[in-house]
Image 1 (tube, helix red, strand yellow):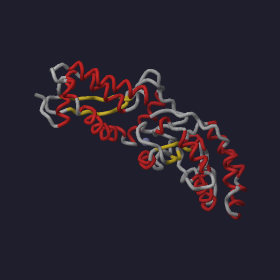
Image 2 (cartoon, protein in one colour):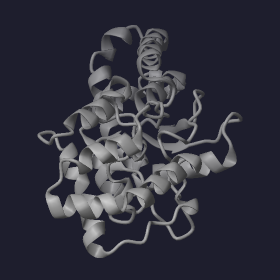
Image 3 (tube, rainbow, N blue to C red):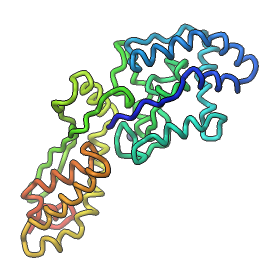
Length: 282
Ligand SMILES: [Zn+2]
């Protein structure tokens, strides 16, 4: 999870530009609601996208549908695909800001367009997302008590480590479990939003799934390092990988965290890694 810069786009100009491409009756209906939409867009920025302060504008089902389907023009083959491309291109290393792992290929509506159709083409409400996070999030970010998930443009994810992993090493097996831990530099409210998102998107399980295979690949050659029974070389190699991962993807990338945790484990470096690749820790 990480914070992205707020898109520097003019929401009302984008709305006008999209509406101009709609067909006659739809265009007229949307033009009649321009004032209400303009007010809602201003409120969105004023309240930093916080759904607890934002009420959907009152519209008929037909107008709601017209607003929601404005988003179709941002499809990859739509007239406004450049907005989509710009937002997808803002992701760091192409990584999803929710999971900081998978590649972005969709636009997530932070406030869902089914509830807030007036924000369907608002760049500040559109976040680059991987398909899995987008699907798991669905429209659940809206809650009667307000937005209870992180907003990648407005929630401040710290640069220090909040992703941690608990590694358990025995002579029979190595297991681990990811979780979040609040750091001193993060506000309670922001941490609650981030933790809710971590839970909803099932990131602990997803990080476990993706990390087991990658770690097994990384350690398949460890027996050379460990040939003389000295864990030092194994530890040094893991630490080198962890530093590389931290430099490229930061401290809250699952790979950084698990590599460092395994390097810190005396038992793991002293041969317990072999249980991961189906060999006894002799
Ligand atoms: Zn994701």
